Length: 95
Image (tube, rainbow, N blue to C red):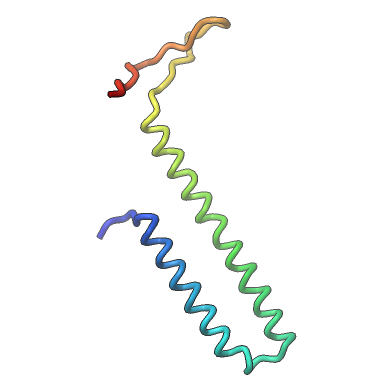
């Protein structure tokens, strides 16, 4: 099995989990007191937000790393002020 999942697969999993949670919540709502329901809702939203942050950071870092792999390296170690930046490898040819 692949280590990486495609965005569509992740979105589909997230959507189905969300629908499952909403459905379970609607079924359980009449069984809970209003204050308990509100507290539980706040806690679940907070956990969802807090667990999303590291996942989003990881995805952004991976996208930046992939972008950097596609971008030619720029050699600025010997650059003097006013000189153009030289490429350490040839730029890709676009057709």
